[in-house]
Picture 1 (cartoon, rainbow, N blue to C red):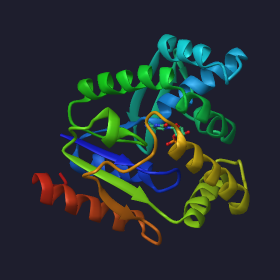
Picture 2: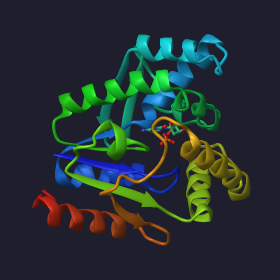
Picture 3: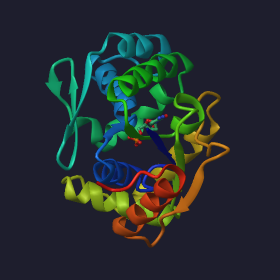
Picture 4: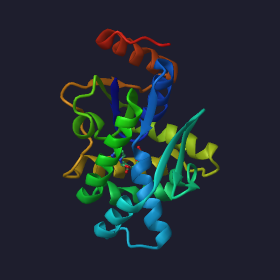
Length: 225
Ligand code: DC
């Protein structure tokens, strides 16, 4: 059973994917963590992030473990827990270098497929999961929300983590990321042809979860455990 959830930053994919996986009793894969890990590894090495060859080298060499934990995903990079560090605004801002490199994407797409094979049944979220990485997925979703709502959610998240930023500042960053996500030539952000579109603006996570489960039930017969 493979369920993909793609969409822009702040559309609620992460929480939705985690909650859906937990409701169905299957695994959860956050593919943004792989791009963030490469970015952090290169930043730590002091490398020039616009050097795609260097970034690809980091992608090939990194030892990355994704461990399910209650309330999130543990990310262990080269033996060190970087679960918090990969989520900082600096890493978010710099991740477009790794995301825009065809060479890095090639390495990470293979890594994501390998992780998927090991997981068996899973919900995966990112930008290209239904289009490129798992084109034969059983159910594909494309989640979106208005830019101002996405900025508000992201700003709340940052405030909770002690990195307060106004929704206006976050909105600018989100719009810039949307543009670079949609414009790249490899793995651009776009809905798969057979994706179910959902707009989560104004919805609680409970509403979104109920809607996702309803679609999964209709298409596959799988129910919440
Ligand atoms: O979903 P996120 O914010 O954790 O993603 C981090 C970065 O990685 C962001 O720049 C988009 C990119 N990304 C991607 O290009 N493809 C994916 N499947 C997942 C994330």
